Image 1 (cartoon, rainbow, N blue to C red):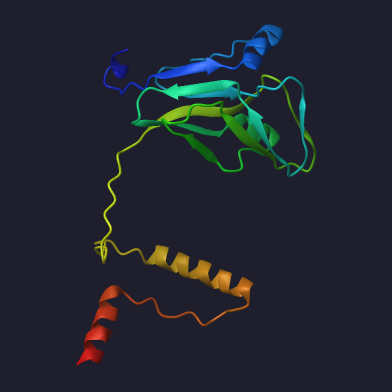
Image 2 (image 1 turned 30 degrees about the vertical axis):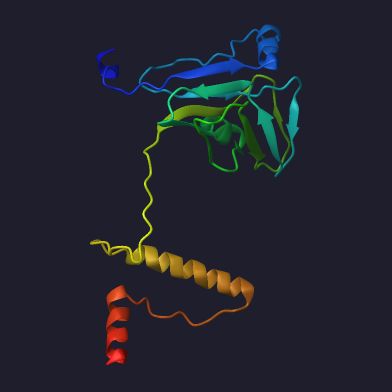
Length: 197
């Protein structure tokens, strides 16, 4: 337990839905989170549904989890992401990748599942469908300025990537134009100074 002594603590109150409590009895499972390892605080969310749910190819369906969370510390947010086993074995994913639930959230967690197979897939009541954890959030202070500072690290690869994206969008809209040179801010300032003289 010494490894855990310096870790931040995030307390959460969890309420199980009425259907989740019923499924605990009918399916003989515990809707509480299983703790596999305190050093890996990831928990599984289950499909809180009464009957099998058919997920057609390419279909996206919202599914309730039977979990109502209450974060007791606003410095944290709940993060829900796809379950690796569901992706690998069944090619079923959360289309948005990751979903966040902030301190102010006080409702049942629902998640979207997408079937990327060419065949129908069945989601069973109580099936594990997503992974649940928490992330610490910083307090953001936003300053609006006339000009941001130049980075000491050149990010030409990032700029080239953005330029390629713009070209693709122009192609789609039929407004393809010749790619222009990627001017640095210093180049623009020198051009302005030269033309003001």
